[in-house]
Amino acid sequence: ARVVIVRSYSSPTPTTTTTTRSCMPSGGACVRACARREVIRRVFGTPKTSSPASASIRRLATMTHATFGEFAATQTSSPSWLTDLTEDPDAAKNAPNRTSREVRSGHYVRVTPEALRAPRGIIGSTSCAQMIGFTLDMHDETFLRYFSGDASAVEGLEQWCTPYALSIMGSRMTSNCPFGNGNGYGDGRAISVGEFVNPVTKERFELQLKGGGRTPFCRGADGRAVLRSSIREFLASEAMHALGVDTTRALSLIESVKGTTARRPWYSSSSDADYAKRLPSMDDPRLASYSPEERAEIVESLKAQKRDPDIMIEEPCAITTRVAPSFTRIGHIDLFARRATAPRATAEQKKQLEQIFRHA
View 1 (cartoon, rainbow, N blue to C red):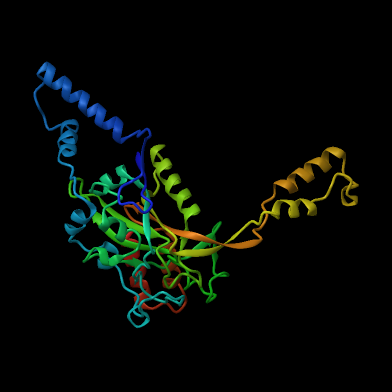
View 2: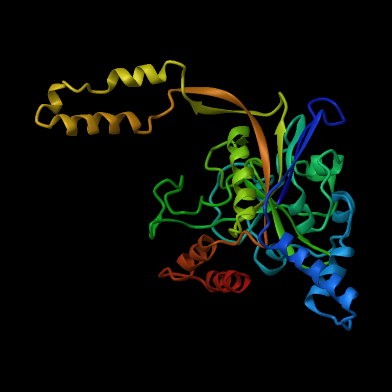
């Protein structure tokens, strides 16, 4: 995995550019192996065949060098979520669908992202962009606008969010749903912004903005992600990929520079001292029945406990673009299974379960 870190600030050209390469257990090794076989064939005169190795070399030689804007203009197929599944019948009358509401039917809701103000590209993955089918340019205006939530940057692409059920440790949850029935769960701050087909490999990828703004499933929240958590998501995703662990990829991280912000809980400068005052000491009467060793263990355990934030701070927002063949999850099937197996399930609810099952 190759990651390009670009800091542009207010200048149109980057002030610093850092390229980091990490081990690719599959792609890089495969290319080197193919190259070695091709050299052996040429030196020893081995008859040329249409082996997987030589086919890989020819395919790599024809990989596109298109910018994102050029690549997006070639995408003519509609997303499978929108062609294979059923739209929320109440979406049109609730447009632009940016407030929390019950979604009782349908597999998706059309919703447009809320663009970041003053976007700046921070991190991008060149290998992820190549996997999708274009060349990464963090300073390309179309790329920067589209993946900071400005859907008008590319005509013809569609955006949507989806409902799904929530289960924790096998138990179906509805307690923190604002409607008490599970109809408020779904993509609360994630918006899918396209399903793209690589012109060479023909692989299909769904792209999703994490922190792209409010949806019907935001449950009263602001639909945003802040920069510090977005950095963690980007780095963890690409590190997992470099280690050979199958998970979602991260295409880009774009922040808002002194523009879009969100209030989040945090820790005051005195929180450590205040917390320490509340901890028992070794001679605390409540610990009198324990041995000195046990007291020390209890005190150390209390020191290590996670404590709650005690203040609210304003933080810059950011958007991470996540990439996967599909963002279909078990919760999607579970939601429609619950509806289709209810005592008074309708024919439409049973049909929607079959649709999502076939789509998955």
